[in-house]
Length: 140
Image (cartoon, rainbow, N blue to C red; front, side, top):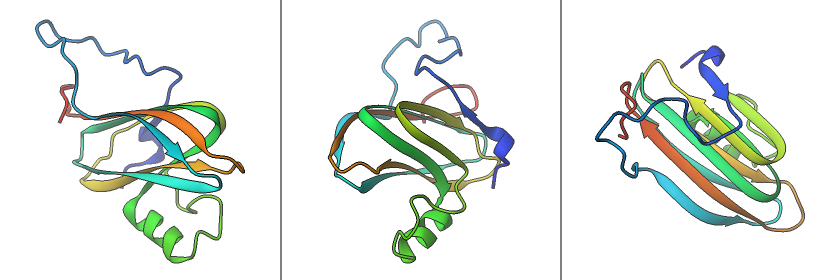
C-alpha cells in the first residue's frame, strides 16, 4: 500500500504536467454527469498498477465528501453496514465541498475505490472526471 505522503489534493483539474508535442488529444478515462441520491454513496473502482497515477475530480451541485480507499477498506465498510459516514481506513477524505480533486500514485498494484458520499437529504448532480496515467503521463 502506498504511503499517505503519495496522496496529493489540488484545486484544479488542469494538470501541471505539459502535454508532449503530437499528443494533444482527448485522454481515455471517465467524464460523465451523475446523480447521487440523498444520503447515498457512489463508488468508482480503479485497478491500478504501482507507479501509475489516478487523477479524480468532481464538481457537485451541493457539498459532498470524496473518499479514497483501497478495496479491503471499502469492503469492510460495506460489510459492517455503512455504520460510519466514511470507511475507517481511508487513504484520503475530502469533506464538505462542491469541488474536489485528488491525485494518487500507489507504490504497488492495487484496487482503489473513490467514493462520492452525499450526506444531504436531497440528490446531488455531479460532473466527474477521472483518469489513470502511466509513469510517462500517458493514459492507460
